[in-house]
Length: 233
Image 1 (tube, rainbow, N blue to C red):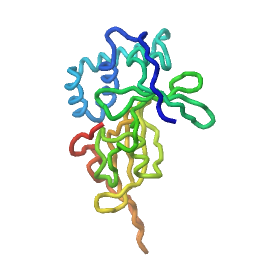
Image 2: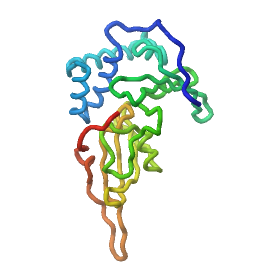
Image 3: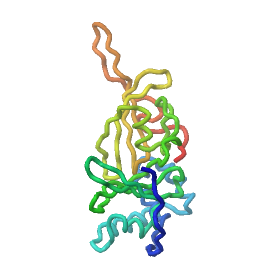
Image 4: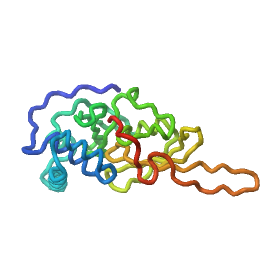
């Protein structure tokens, strides 16, 4: 179903905490893997690391408070009314996906998936139009912050979900060719749905009479997870 515009809502606002501060909350987790990209993003926001840490501290205190709203109301307070909402079937359950536009990632949307009871089941960055996804054909096309979970899953099926190292992190295991066309086993890590780092390992090539051995991490996203230049959100 196509997204439907949300009705205007003027009863929102949290003093001293809005879209910029919320983006800093997302950046705080990404700083663990991509400090150089986070520094660039903070400069665009006119903020520093101290402000980012304070925004994250305030957010964590608010979400742990028994009096702070939950579900959709929580995000309306901070981000205003959602840009759109989509009814989505998850198994046998009707759910609602809410989308907000964030200035740091204009091509993406921050999605909150609400269960039938209105509780937030998932929160991450998604691409509203898959046609705008970057072309991902080989491991060389992967770029930090250049893709979301669904971009990679669609480009290299079948991808297998991996448990993240924190609630805001997700992982994918998949196979993709390197620039020379050699198959690689890949493991990618995402924070708030945005690609952060990955490792690659050559696919074992069995030959008669020999035992295939595991390869070493290769490619721009291996080991340190570094790649040339940031990707566009």
